[in-house]
Length: 364
Ligand code: AHN
Ligand code: ZN
Image (cartoon, rainbow, N blue to C red; front, side, top):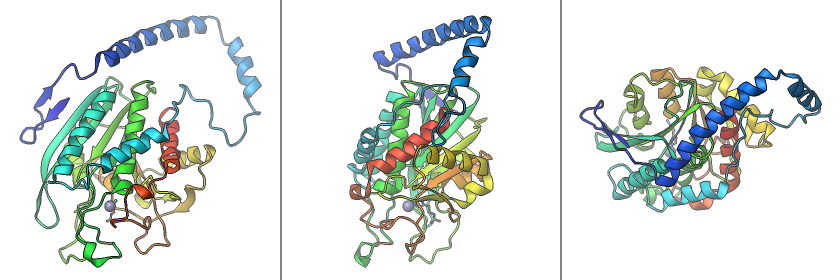
């Protein structure tokens, strides 16, 4: 783990031996496999393209329209039960509200879990000021896969949960912290499953998975304090202080509320403003995989979320896959910011739809 000290961002405490032996031997084998592949590729090249052409011709024109084009590398199979388990484990800590014990315990578990899968893990610990003046102790947890590759893709989600159920139908619960099974844990659950698969089979791109803290400590619905940049505090911090000073990525994908049954994802406003090509690519992949009912061919509204600051401050074109529903008063899933945002709303099918879509996008 590389530990980013809050008082000195450039002080990296590097801890070696973070991978269990079995994983390390696998990493070594991967190098061997890569070398073998390179030798075979050179040999194949020297024999010309004739054989390849006939195979290509046989397939062309017969491929069904709803099939995703053959990937350069085989896309791993997303395990929805594994993702569901990762969501459940987070929720079991209790509401992951900054400064709480559950938050601290969840941070340790998330870091350890990421260390099982990623090549390098950075923990960025700092303090930020919430809208009401509360100082929050927060941690962004960053898993880096194949740090040696220059072409990179950023995947992210927030891991904290909201301190207030300010949309709960019961007014007595308006200051009760929420489980955030969908609003928080679902995106992280999908990304931990992606991380598990990346540890076994790498795409041709470097991947960075960032679990942002303090996304959901924004202004209480009934507070009369001024509205400002009080959501997405962890991503604002990271955007100004990336884990590597020169960090860049071709594009980013944020997952927010990606686990509810009957989820509907619309083309979110800032995603279309900053990264329309990525939105089209992702929605197209989802449709081809058979998830057109979830990934709707419809524009949504503009959501101030983690991706907004990544776009605005770091200039990395980043989209938000977020459940929007214009039949609810707030525009999100019905249990949004209520105590009912618990495991009962989570449907493994939705996790799978999003996970497969992300995997197909990053492995192509
Ligand atoms: C606003 O309502 C301004 N942003 C919503 C971002 C959010 C909250 N995502 C999850 N919870
Ligand atoms: Zn929220």
